[in-house]
Length: 306
Length: 112
Image 1 (cartoon, rainbow over the protein chains, first blue to last red):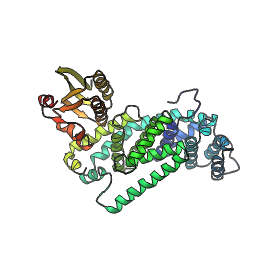
Image 2 (cartoon, chains in turn blue, orange):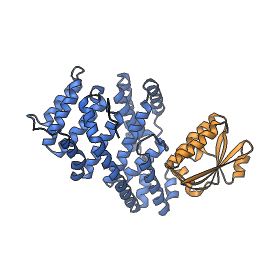
Image 3 (cartoon, rainbow over the protein chains, first blue to last red):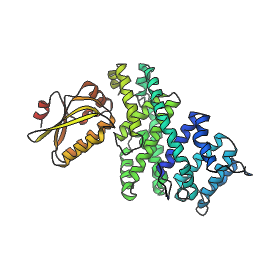
Image 4 (cartoon, rainbow over the protein chains, first blue to last red):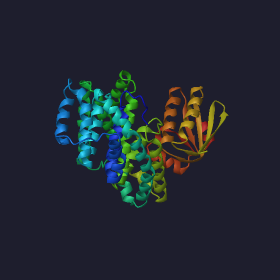
């Protein structure tokens, strides 16, 4: 829950909202309307249709976001953008909401603007309510799906990378290298939001691997944390939000392997850190996972696959 | 109560007996107890896990963090009487090598 008297939309909140809106989109029209469209409508964000479509507006706002002298106009323009999206389609509302949240993540003048704070406070309660309501449903869906999974499916889910295939190894290494280069570029530019986002992605993808640059990235995190207090905590929140999204999206899309990998990565990275979001929910799912592995007598098989 | 912890001194070693489940719910309290113990200089610890029926990554996480602290201070946490279903989780999440495991509390004590 966000506090009142907010001066800035916290990065973790913006990231969490963006992921929750994506999950809302996966949940169907009814949930999307109840938890996103109605709250914005009721808060008076829907106005008469503008002359320009959201597509045109997005182009202009993107340009403004790249111009230091115009970045302060992004938040008021985003408010008009959302207002217009509410007159268009549900998909436009989703896209424009995520765009506004991404802008908050990338630019401090946007996340500190009154429009951004107002937007976050409008969405805070409904999105939290949606998350709470989804939690039990997701755990039940996950349990049902696990029960019907075959031994082979489990083995695949517990093999993070098929290291037997050289091509696969090369792809994974290339992806890690590309991401690492992007981190270095963002670091040289001193672009903190980009660094945080890229490092979170890198860590989520490579925490279990032996990537050659992993120790350099860990050193970079330490250095950032010394220079920018709270950097590691925010990074952890980012990673937890990403992994939770992977787990829930996997469940919603019937991709249980994706969900299991997410739980496993979450368990590996955070090891029960009670400060990170979703730790109780993921812990409950982890418990269900082990319960089904025991019921199916798969422990030895899965450990062999490690 | 999900987890009960009782403590007993065995010379310079402290034996902590854990009974119940070590998961995200019970891990913070267990962590506080281990932290306080190691912080007070009692860095040689045997965890008697005969009564531990379940562990999740949250539990492994606090054991791992306290193992690091104990080692830094010249001690170590050793595990005794680990149930197969608990060891399975250690194995699956690759924590087995970080903790010496013994069949009995006596064997673990002898190894210090």
